[in-house]
Image (tube, rainbow, N blue to C red; front, side, top):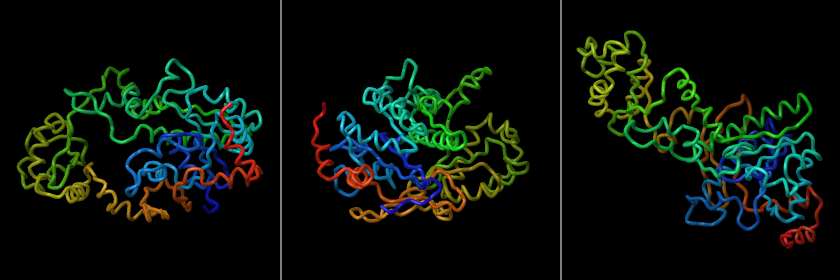
Length: 396
């Protein structure tokens, strides 16, 4: 792997985290040029290495699409932190580290001599980022969490789904990726504070708090007497998918008659059910019925561009194929190819932000323990014989 160059090219990161949120935070740091050394358990690695789907027909530790995405531009070393000599190697690496990201149960690393207090004693400038479901203290601190648990207990699910049905989960691992972005943002702020004021600190990231903040309107509205409720969807079915026409929300004066003309029903421009935004909102189902008849004969992207040209808040439900073919993404060169010697060219999304003139660093995820010798021998001065002895040491 070539030396990174970027806005964080002078920053060294130890990534002890596993799963999604912590590794995504470290991925963003690596994308900005930081050297990120991922520390994995020997033999099995990060559990995401075993997550489906797998690239190609292989089902091994090097083929998980999730791991390949979350760990681009990183190096991998293997250390069993329960083995004293291997934990000591990590301590030595932490002495010259700017930032450490971990996702262990609160308190787990302390008796191993790898907690914040122990490591910051030898490295006062260390920024130690802990990413957990519920944070480092409180009655839930030792509870287990997952994306659906975080969405549920953070009250996001309470607002999603049909009003007479069970709450629904947002697809994928959206809560964990959002938590990863929160951890990245806090890491960057802590780096700024260290550079400005000269000290590191322990950053505590709670996924529950992140998701509660992400939809804080629920708790704010509640205090003003509005209980959050799930609402009927405002989607209509187009010829090849689904569209949100946005005509029940604010539109510019004079737009509604133009939409009626477009749909071939100019008489509805004066229909009292639809003549104002408030009326259209109160008669949403009637409105969707009218729009739906027109939309059913049109491709969703044509509807999107046509109604957007009339300055309405219109969108369509994109498929993965739509994303990859998007004119907006193509123009901004969002999707990037990554060459892999085993799987060939794999397309990856770009970063969730842009910094002017800053190149996004993107190279394949590392093989398990690929950089053991480079890091432990080259950086800590171990001989190959000493390296072998470290890995042959049994758990004390």
